Each structure stands twice: as structure tokens, then as C-alpha cells.
Length: 91
Length: 237
Image (cartoon, rainbow over all chains, first blue to last red; front, side, top):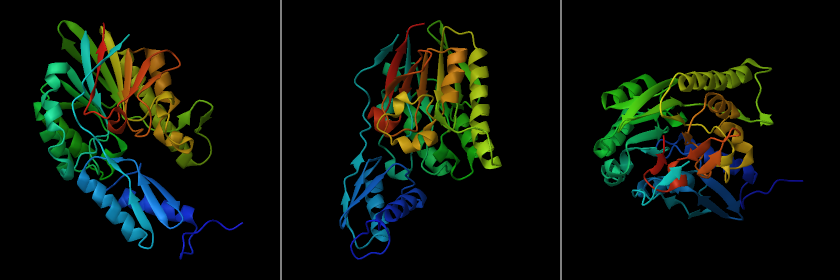
């Protein structure tokens, strides 16, 4: 059975996902290994966390460069970095 | 009581400058020391590390770190270790340090650790040289961790790693990548030597709390997991 392919493309979707994840790992603006990438039809969803707003935007730039024909949904969260309000007793 | 602050996977770089200093300025009020569980930087460069050191300036407590896989990316490890050392952050790799906290002593043993997987579903040092090297690297680091822990006779002991020592704290990660997230050899080493707590990072999609097969508490302090600038754990020696 043929693998699902993004509309208008000849590359099976799982290879597209792998290519995008590889680009996110190796682009110096991002260098992230943990961003989750999912394709549904002609939409690509990005989920996970990043440490700043510029890095969130950089992820989207890198992905658009890899898959210009897909609609990108940047659902990445920017991590909170407040001091903790509690502590845990280890017994 | 000894209050241990810990965080991993800060992945610091210039674009995040100024985001952590507020929380670290308050750290001395709530903790006696700080443990950094690796991936201090995004690409392992001196410039990125300097940003982190600037953020840490207010954290005027004893500070200890292990490196993570991201810190190796630019092949600048020796330089990074020197930079950390000159800023008063002691890097542990198969060795140990002792801190006196109000008359109680805390021993800290650290290693980056490495992957390989967990008992029943792990790599073996068998076959191709690359596979043997992979597993033997983890085993060597685990052996060093065991030796470092066993060398200390302190009131309390903590093991600090980047890679995970148990799979308990990987819940939320995809099963397929467990062998790249940690190794049971690290947990086995700590169980054999004894400790009061293990702190690790690396598993961004994991969970905070776990326990080794020998009953030692494990905490995954990766920033995306704890969702605060650091977590604080209180040890009662």
C-alpha cells in the first residue's frame, strides 16, 4: 500500500516529518530535538516547548523553508521561567 | 535540612537573555545549592554559556553542573568546563564534591551519563564496534558514578546526571526513543552505591517523579517538565 503523501507532493509524509525534524535539529537558530511535527492533510502542526519568543518564530521560519506548500500551525508554547512557589520534602 | 535547587535543559542562548535572572536572584532565599542537570546551552558555544553565567550571577550559592548532549555539539567541552569553573560552577564528570550546609554535609556525584535503554529493552555491547562503543561508553560513565558516590561518607548524597537513570520519569516520551534518553546502568550504579536523591534532565516530555528499583527517589528537572526556573527539594540528613 502506498504511504500517505502531502497534497501536491511526491514524498511520503513520514519522510517529510523526518526531514523537518532534521532541519530543526541542525539549524543554528533552533537546534531542537524535541519538537513534535504532525501532518494532517495539507496542514502541519508543531507542538512542544521553546525557551523564547524569538526561538518560537525561528522554528516556524525553518519549517516554512522546508515545506512551503503546507499550512503551518505553530502551537509551540514558550516555557515559563518564574521562581518556584513551593518545594518538595524528600523522605 | 538541606535545600537543593535543580534544573536541567536551560538550552541558553542570546535570544533568551534576561529570562532567568529574576528567578535566580531569588534562589539564595529558598535553596542552599544549585544543581544544573546538563544542556546548559543550545549549541555548546562559549557565547551561549556566557549568557547563562550572566543569568546565574544572583544565584550566590554553591553551584554544580553536569554537561548534556547539546553542550557537546560544537566540540568545545574543555573550554566550556574552564569557563564554568572560572565562574564558580563546578562541573562533575565521574567525580564528587562535598558541600557543608549548616553543619550537615551533602555529597554530590555527577556524570553526563548516556543512553542504551532500560532493563529488558536495552542495547548490549555485542556485534559491531559502534554498538559496543555506544554501550561501553554508558557503562564506563555509570561505573565512574558508582565509584564517586561510594567514595563519599557524607550526611546525605545526591547523584546528578543528564541522561535518565530510570524509565519512570520518561512517561510522556515516545517509547521508541527511550534508548536515547537514558540507561538502567545509571540507576543500577546509584542503587549499588546508595544515595538520597537522583536528579536528571534530558527527557523534555517526561514526568518529574520516579524511583529506582532500589527505592531511591528520582526527579526529572528538565525545564519543560518542572515548568519553573528550578525545583527545590529538601533533604533531611
